[in-house]
Length: 266
Image (cartoon, rainbow, N blue to C red; front, side, top):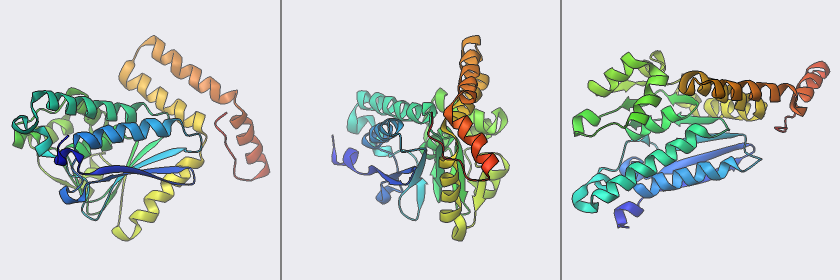
């Protein structure tokens, strides 16, 4: 790999049941390199097997950006060759697939620039919260790049076909307030409240029943993606598992005793 490909990192920290994945390439406003996509996918997949982790937060390092896009130098065939471009696209899809299919809630905390690859990562997540300085754009049309079909699919599921077309064709910037109005983010926080407010939501999510959250994700996927009888059967089975679980007993008992439930995911 070249030095450019090695630039940037993706690191994981844990606070209680919440794991934070931080995308760190501050010299380029957290633009994604091939190595960073590879590490992102590895990090999400590894957290899937940590029982103590109940929610996964994705965020950008430094003051300027969530993710400002792809590191353009990593896409230049003159520098890396066409095979490297294919590897980049494969690593991108692999990482985003890991986020999409994670059984644990994935939460994007967005500040500053969220362009291109940043929007792709955010829309692959279950939940998205933004600081009021966040700026969103998909500038592929200004660069002559194609926006992969699986990325368009994620975008359409979040904002709908009309807004997706506007984002891809007009390629303009949206501020945080517009992003909230169009459904791209769930809530916008003032800068002074962002850190505590968004992480409080993540902490609350991490306390919820894992089987119930997993069943919700399976049901939404069955109804919006697969739409097959087998997918709907899987969703029904996931719901039934909730009702027969120890967590359901714990939830009823805690409600009766007026205390906070202690869910185990079993």
